[in-house]
Length: 252
Image (cartoon, rainbow, N blue to C red):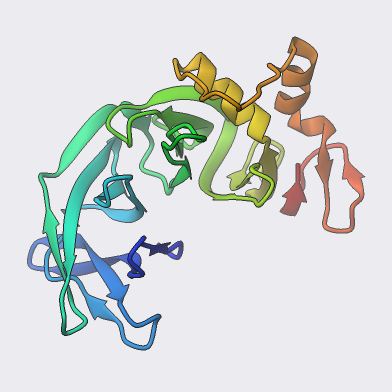
């Protein structure tokens, strides 16, 4: 996992895959001194999996999402910072959930906003929700990752590895591999921006209640269709609009 996490108390963490007598296992690689020194966690986070992602929940605990064939794997942990610069991790029980199901494919988890007086609690997860590498889906959790609900299908056709980041505007940038336009030439790299308004719309439709002061203008059918029609909004790095995605980097 090349997408790290900086906790609220300043610990930098990455998940990492190792092999030992248990097979393929996930540990946490961490630093308490802003990257000057790195240590491997004292305990295994998950066994028998790889390509995991890590987030910190509102109560300070860690939420680990791991790639598996079938249901997504999960684990949670609390941790203690020690005076000598080490961190002691206390992992719970490995679980799997049917809320997020699909192909064994790299995916991403993003804490979009945290519950407060002014923001709703929103976690996003991208993943492939079929047995093959197609149908890139966005799922949302309103309770810190305990349960998930599908809210949007980004690409119903050939697609796989994805990653997300929140932009200063409140929009989310999503980068993923798209095979739907390739005609046998491999994957194109597509970049899609999901607007803040779209995310809040998903939140309301998933059963969330917006705090007082957060406005929402629901997307009409025409705007929603425009968002879903990627073929009409694809550009290369030179800013030229394309009739279809091509091998290389495309921006939607």
